[in-house]
Length: 140
Length: 128
Image 1 (tube, rainbow over the protein chains, first blue to last red):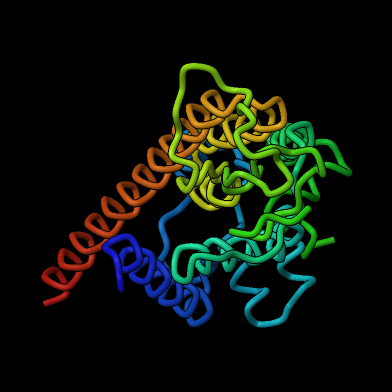
Image 2: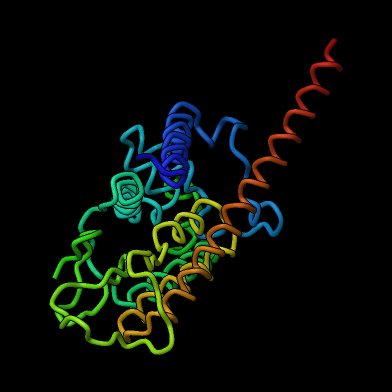
């Protein structure tokens, strides 16, 4: 029997699939289809996620190098996030997810710290760090 | 030991699954869970929403994703300590911050779409 929750999960899966197709077809770097990062727009600083849509677009086209230049954090996290999302979808739809390691809390905190640090460091105008700004590695 | 419900790997002496909160086999039947005065429906999942917390942090580009990750880590810390009620509370907070972040993100995208539409219609009417 389909419950309301399962329908909702199915609807979100469909919406996510549409978003992935849109992201593959339209390049966020050149089309005005996708909104700019609100943090970047309001403050002028890069956030940890700046360039993530452009990175996913490049990943969907198999350009690992270009994706890495846009947002290395997204490229590193992408396989884990994909696995986690598939697991969550399966858990909601058929009641069983994929096998997952029990993450210790300290690792999650370390990840949180890494994300914040990445957000700070990519704004620094000092040489090795400025490469982390979206797209900067393409112009080395 | 792997959870029979969600498949998450757990410590061998874990009472509940860190991923979904289900009671793990191997517990002596009737043994009290390390929670007092709280009855939790055991089939209800204690999820940490970590995947969604990272997603909203990286793709919504808003600081609201950070508390979601912090609460996700608290869920696992409290499950490890056997504090099921605390884990559930942290789980609710993690979910809340994911929703706030996702909601704000959808709001921003909506406003952006509206502005773009208005700008487009202006440029069309001016070119005529």
